[in-house]
Image (tube, rainbow, N blue to C red; front, side):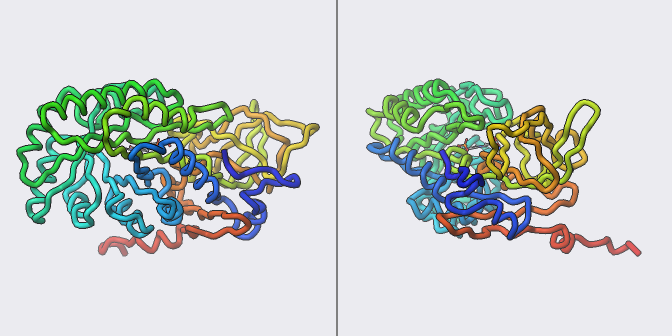
Length: 420
Ligand code: LLP
């Protein structure tokens, strides 16, 4: 579900004509729909109604402060994985007592930052991290509120690079070791264990792995309670997948039902860390065809957007649907094309052998479902700009990140003293 649709033959984002934005600010750019973000947040909130649940938006999916603020205004907390994300969440107005700090390699500076801000909880992923946090908390005269992230050894059946809950993955504490680690943690003066956490992967399009992992977490929580540990909070992570191709994916209601079925008797606060589900379909990447090139065996649409702007196809073989800003007509001639960027790598390919209405230089296209892990993963490779981000609400739009050009970036570089 999103608020991008054709109206009078042209693509609109909510009530704004996307090609009008392109005329005003130039391409490529990311365009987000605030109402789509709100829609997804509300849908998840509704699905979790009746539980003592807090939705901590996973800032890594899209960390623009305007996006975080849109969610924070609706009552969302934040899941952060670096000092930078923590700074953004606070700047966007997320109350510290709704912020969770996750991540497998938090530095001592980052742990100190989290303690200084008095955030809700730090998710600990290893014993060395636990010891480090205890030491820092001690030096700051504080008691750190901690959840132990378990690795439940469950395959999320998603792309290998975004699976995080198998025993061979670097994340969490092996679930069979939790008893030892919690008893160790209990002896540390500046650590207070408040619960357990888990996140088995991203872009899950089946619910079974969630069910398996939640069930494992639930029995572990019960077991620890029987041993006298106070497990008052469970962080269930994120991971709910979205549709990139129009095919159905699990609904928030189905996800919510599993959560309720598994945890109904536990009487625990529950945290959720969704990222992609909330912002994924709420963003498009708007780009222009530079050239149409006939190769020996293929026809290429060469765009002004590239792999540095949207890494997902290159990194995960992700298939984002690509549409024209002008509504296709039934009798349009279709061309079979490869849609590529201008970067000097064959991996700079958004789609291969897809059918699109015959395009020419200057035509505008939208790469859909680019709201999550798009702008945040972009780089300046090939000395390209970081592209603008804009957000639409109703019939207004606002630029929420300016284009950052190589000229600006070069200002941070200098020649060594010995250079003549
Ligand atoms: N919580 C933790 C601890 C995480 O590591 C992640 C994502 C999330 C929550 C949010 O997961 P989501 O609800 O968005 O699936 N760049 C990849 C995705 C990486 C996900 C990393 N962790 C991609 O473009 O597919």
